[in-house]
Length: 126
Image (tube, rainbow, N blue to C red; front, top):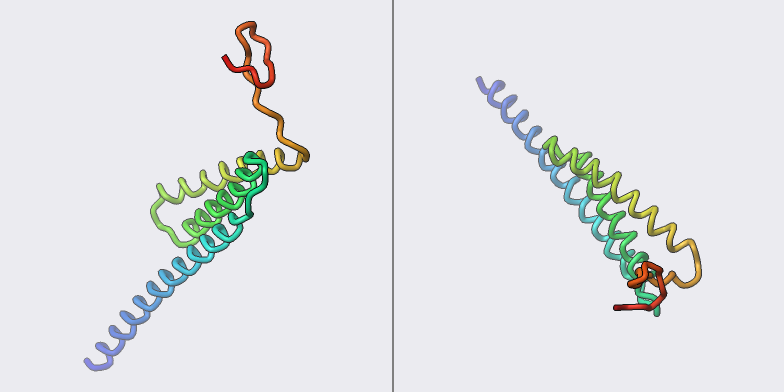
């Protein structure tokens, strides 16, 4: 009887230790992802708000990808796992757009809107 109790106790400790290790692994991975994201977002400001926005949003989106990957590694809820997969795809696409804009070099082009005649003019506002 004592050996059975000892065995059950050992199994219980092993299972709870495994669950704790998984929780610790999750927390460590999430903390690391957030620390990388917040550090990378602190790029400083230039005279170009558009470039600053893109330069700060790229690490923000990468942080979302990193956190979604942690969910895929540790999470069990299939709805959240599907959401995480979607986040990874969408955030990568948005990062690519922002990197493309930043790689164009020079100043970003001003936004143009059509005038009453339907022709775009820089700086025209009704």
